[in-house]
Image (cartoon, rainbow, N blue to C red):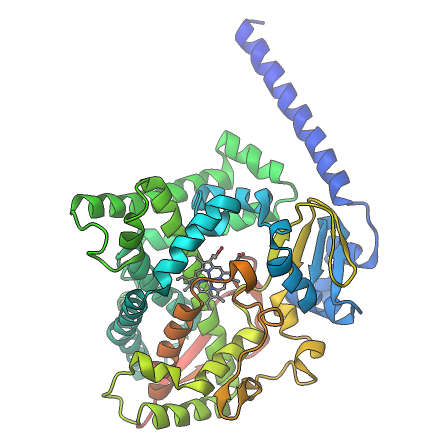
Length: 493
Ligand code: HEM
């Protein structure tokens, strides 16, 4: 045997031994032998006989837990729906509950050092910068103009086209995903993928971005991180696809940045986020990572919220009527007058209806952190260093002990006091997270959703055809498996 063959043999033997050694450590670490009821049901998937979504099963378990917390030992995961625990994790003892390396590794190839994927100083720097930029009045009105233009030039004509053709069923989720992709790309990069043009083109960016985020999430579903890491090392299977789709996303982002630098339109000359960040950051790779994080954070979340909102309205026509009455009162009944930014502030019932919809269907159904040092949560649960702690927003929205005996009803009135919207504690309602790392796009997303809702609700009746319970596909954001079919009719005004 020559030297090269010997070396290969040693290398492969070592790799295989290392793989099995790591796998055993991982299994021991996971406590995979646990045969408690919850772990057995998880491993055998027997929960699927009663529940269509894993989140529904967790909700059931959390409702029955006296502390509102459960422990899935095989996943080394503590899951809580207890507001005191949530406050402790995301505010009081924030530093002990970072996103952690395990999470960052999953999305690292796509997001790099972008805000969504980092902790510590790197996160803090971007947080400060982004909070400052997003807080400015000029960027808010820029976001508002983008959204209104996208609605008037694409979304409304698209719905009109469908409402004229009585036999056609559209996929609401797909339409809202296209709408939010166009809006967030224009806002972050000044780039228009045009995905809601009448021919519904599939842009290169959209397909590459979708595939990258799906495959990153699938990494998290493999029994051990070692599996995807080995696949990545040898560049095979899903990791090969992931690598090439990430390459496309980064190539497009790099081109936009390069052209922006070349055109000499430096900071201040354009209003999108990229131009604003260019003023402070000279490293183009870092700049690219930051902007890609915004695409991920702001695209599917808004699409998911709009989809479930129209699903709930379709089942609750009285709520749609109340929204229309409010719109007539605040904006007037003519469609000629476009809503102003100021008008939106007075739409208390619409604001409440959107909050209520996200209570039942939060776009981010749960959020996990990794414990830095051993700790005890306020409800007495011990959390060991390295374990995963998840607060379950979806379950929290359905807890009687938080929202009362009508917790499963869609009732926007619960958010109204003396005719005005009254917010709830973010620790009871962590739809936008809350505390130190609260969503930076909260205001912007609410403006966007209100604009869409008011433009569509006044003009159209949207009837969702899949009235059964929604089945969600696995992912970072709640996406309905197979889409949401609907028919659209123009209203007689
Ligand atoms: C209905 C819409 C939205 C919902 C429900 C939502 C929810 C959330 C949640 C739960 C987080 C925390 C995620 C985590 O740390 O794991 C988050 C973070 C974030 N969101 Fe949103 N989001 C929405 C829209 C947006 C939009 C439109 C933007 C962009 C303008 C945006 C930008 C961000 C950013 C940058 C972060 C990271 C903040 C940080 O880590 O400090 N979000 N969002």
